[in-house]
Every structure is written in structure tokens, then in C-alpha cells.
Image (cartoon, rainbow, N blue to C red):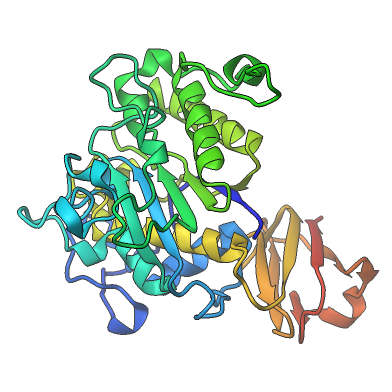
Length: 402
């Protein structure tokens, strides 16, 4: 099985101004949420569709329902991925003895949300994955600028397997890393830049094998975390989420937050990461009451849906366990709007349709459609719509307005 590391910029999804609803058919698992003046209808279909747009997947999430069933996954996270008596479960009921003392932010003791609404429990239910270890600590960081800080690179990053024998010593098939926001908020002076000196950070030990030195910045700590994970769990698919939007950003800190996210992406890319980008203009300050439990940082049930669908779309696009062929449909747009985003992953033999409109009134759209390098524009472009009855190879749609 090939190894993949996916860096997910988990941030935001599309919304429209209508009353908030919860429909059993959509997969939303909660009751009413606190809604600000701008009320919004958000369904699981909207979230799933938008997540797939940014990940390049098809609107109907394409996967073999049995492909991931029973695969194990472990989490390395902070408070956003905690839940009392699950992420810090003690004793023989859990697969790794080191997580028992972990602090949690989400809890059944305060009216936040149910365990089933967390992004990782939804992921488990929707994809048939089996949670192995949730090594998430409230307040934890990549870096360890002082001894009290819980740096992930120190030992937590290699405690993602069964060390009890309860699960026959199972190793995770998938590892999900979701950290960085506490480094950003608490230790802004030691974030570092994207210019990580990897030869210095991972020196040759004299026998041709690289080791690692103590990191001096958060970015170096993230690099060491990924290095140790890929060394300890060489067969695991590793997915890394960049920071979720924070509602306490301001004119001074937001550019730093954006840069830090980009720098984390470069670190992930160094280790073979597949970058998965999401817009950051939907989970916003004005919508903080809709997506955050504390109006600042910790997602509520609806915010958890955003994370769930983002991670699902990335896993379904990049996992090695897909059993059927899929083809990419790439959209290269200049002054043109598409009703499905910037691309899709389409199951072989399935239809593909996209409507293209100029971004400004009075303009026209010129289109070229290539199927495996062959120009098929005349056959599939008509009345503002590209319509392909059955996709059998990679497709590129180039469109410009004039």
C-alpha cells in the first residue's frame, strides 16, 4: 500500500441566507443551533458538495462503502479533537495507556454537543473506520518552548498504536493530525518561517540513517512530528489539517495566521504531502456564532460538520483503498464562474456536467475541453454547459471570458 500524507486546510464552507434547518435526510445529527442575525440553512449536502469541490472529488462522494470498513485510524490533536472519557479514556478499555491523563475541552458534563457530533466520530460512522487511538490533549502544541508545554513531537506522535494488546497490537491504517492553533496563539514568537533547514534538523547519524535534533521553532517541531510518524508508522496514510479559522484574529495577527498556514503546508509537502485547500471566507468573524461553541475557536456541532466533510472528501480522494477507477476533471478558469468549483473526481463511466458563465455581464465564454489530450469541445460544449455522458479518462476544461 502506498503512503500518502494529506495536508488539509480545514476552514470554511459555502452558505446562503435562509433560516437554519435540520433535516434527517441530509445527515445533520443535531437539533437547533444558536444562529446570529444572518441566519443560514446549512445541510450536510451543502457541506459535502463544497468540500468535494475544493478537494477535486465528485458531488456524489465516490467511494466503495466497504473499501474503508474496519480500517483503523488514530488522531494526534488538540482540544478541537477531544471529548471527555473518549480521548482520555483510562484503563484497559483503551488501546494506548499514555492518553489516560489527557485534558479534554468537549465533555458530556457541559451543554456543548454529543460525542456523536465530533468530527472524528462522524468520520468513523460515515466511512466505517474504527477509532484506534485519539491522542488529543486540550492546549497541546507541536512545539515545546518550555517543559510544561505538551509538544506533540516529544512522544505523543509515536503513541498512536495499540500498546495494550486489546486490539492485537494494531497499528493505525490512517493517521489524522489536527494541531497548530495553540502554537499560533500562545507562542507567536517561536513559529518560525517556511525556510526549514532539513539537513540540519535531520542529520545523518553516521550510518546513512537520519535522526532528528531538538526543534527550535513550531515549524521545526511540526517537521519532526511528521518525520517521527512516518518513521514509526511507515504503512499509514497520514493526513494533516492546518489551522481552523479563529474568530479572535485581527488586522495584525491574520496575515501571520495565513503565512503560518502556508508554512505548515510547505513542511507537510516536504514529507510528500498532498495539499488540500479550502476557502477561508465562509467561517468568518460575522458567522462565529453559527460555527463556534465559544464564538472564538471551538466548533459547535455545525462547525464539526465542516471539519468532518473536509476530512472525508480528502480521505476519499487520496486513500489507497479505493477499489474502482476515478478520473479527475480539472477546470482552468479565467473570468469565468463554474457551478461546481474548480474540479471533481468522477467515477469511471459516470456523467459530468458543469455550467460556465462569465463573471461580468455582457461578456462571452470561450471554452476548450480536452479528454486525455484529445479536443472534444464541439461534442460536449453547448448553451453554456459542458456535458460529458460518460467519463473514461482525465478531463481538462479551459474557459476564459471576453
